[in-house]
Length: 107
Image 1: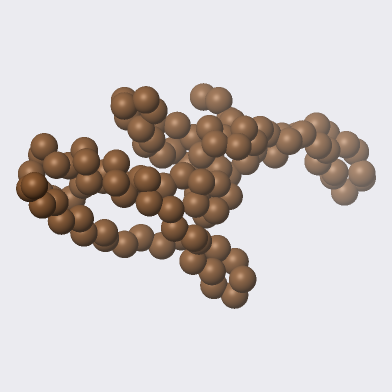
Image 2: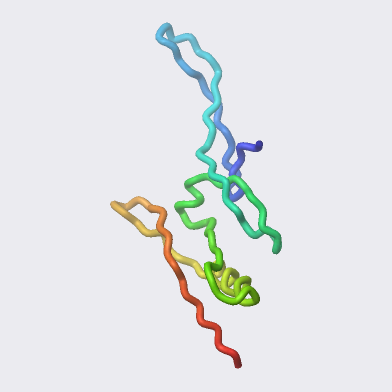
């Protein structure tokens, strides 16, 4: 399992763990990665994305909840193309979820 962010490429950092006697032992600081399903070239796959990228809005999760199966892909693509600014709480971005309704009209 690779500990690398799919979006920004953040990798583990390395440093020292200091004991009471100040003996330095090498350790690894892993990034906070979450498993997310993304659409990569038309095929969904699971990748690891750091929480900073998730909160900043670089990666957006979208799925069709209901409706005709033929229109589900169009609705998902429309939702992924929409760009939203992150919701801020005390100046810090927070994760929010919501429902977007798309109405398709036959022309």
